[in-house]
Length: 70
Image: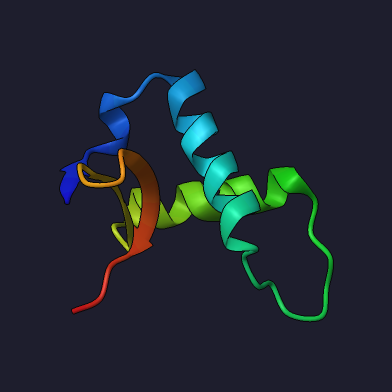
Protein backbone atom coordinates (compact mmCIF):
# COMPACT_ATOMS: atom_id res chain seq x y z
CA UNK A 1 0.00 0.00 0.00
CA UNK A 2 1.13 3.50 -0.80
CA UNK A 3 0.39 6.34 1.62
CA UNK A 4 -0.98 9.46 -0.04
CA UNK A 5 -0.68 12.75 1.84
CA UNK A 6 -4.20 14.17 1.91
CA UNK A 7 -2.83 17.65 1.22
CA UNK A 8 -1.47 16.35 -2.11
CA UNK A 9 -5.03 15.84 -3.36
CA UNK A 10 -7.24 18.51 -4.85
CA UNK A 11 -10.29 19.44 -2.77
CA UNK A 12 -12.53 17.58 -5.24
CA UNK A 13 -10.38 14.44 -5.10
CA UNK A 14 -10.17 14.55 -1.30
CA UNK A 15 -13.93 14.96 -1.01
CA UNK A 16 -14.38 11.96 -3.32
CA UNK A 17 -12.09 9.77 -1.20
CA UNK A 18 -13.79 10.89 2.03
CA UNK A 19 -17.29 10.35 0.61
CA UNK A 20 -16.35 6.94 -0.74
CA UNK A 21 -14.98 5.96 2.67
CA UNK A 22 -18.09 7.21 4.48
CA UNK A 23 -20.47 5.34 2.19
CA UNK A 24 -18.43 2.15 1.72
CA UNK A 25 -17.36 1.69 5.31
CA UNK A 26 -20.72 2.53 6.83
CA UNK A 27 -18.93 4.46 9.54
CA UNK A 28 -20.40 3.86 12.97
CA UNK A 29 -21.37 6.99 14.85
CA UNK A 30 -23.38 5.33 17.61
CA UNK A 31 -27.05 5.94 18.27
CA UNK A 32 -27.16 9.44 16.84
CA UNK A 33 -27.65 10.22 13.16
CA UNK A 34 -25.12 12.63 11.70
CA UNK A 35 -25.41 14.75 8.57
CA UNK A 36 -23.02 13.96 5.73
CA UNK A 37 -21.18 17.24 6.35
CA UNK A 38 -20.58 16.25 9.98
CA UNK A 39 -19.15 12.91 8.87
CA UNK A 40 -16.95 14.64 6.30
CA UNK A 41 -15.61 17.00 8.97
CA UNK A 42 -14.88 14.08 11.31
CA UNK A 43 -12.90 12.17 8.66
CA UNK A 44 -11.04 15.30 7.59
CA UNK A 45 -10.18 16.07 11.24
CA UNK A 46 -8.81 12.53 11.62
CA UNK A 47 -6.65 13.06 8.52
CA UNK A 48 -5.42 16.45 9.72
CA UNK A 49 -4.55 15.12 13.18
CA UNK A 50 -2.73 12.08 11.82
CA UNK A 51 -5.23 9.62 13.33
CA UNK A 52 -6.08 8.50 9.78
CA UNK A 53 -4.26 8.33 6.47
CA UNK A 54 -5.16 7.79 2.83
CA UNK A 55 -3.69 4.74 1.14
CA UNK A 56 -3.71 3.40 -2.40
CA UNK A 57 -3.73 -0.37 -2.88
CA UNK A 58 -1.95 -1.28 -6.12
CA UNK A 59 -3.40 -4.79 -6.19
CA UNK A 60 -7.04 -3.70 -6.12
CA UNK A 61 -6.51 -0.23 -7.61
CA UNK A 62 -8.49 1.33 -4.76
CA UNK A 63 -7.95 4.25 -2.44
CA UNK A 64 -9.29 4.41 1.09
CA UNK A 65 -8.93 5.99 4.49
CA UNK A 66 -7.33 3.90 7.23
CA UNK A 67 -7.10 4.59 10.93
CA UNK A 68 -3.51 4.88 12.11
CA UNK A 69 -2.59 2.48 14.90
CA UNK A 70 0.61 2.49 16.89
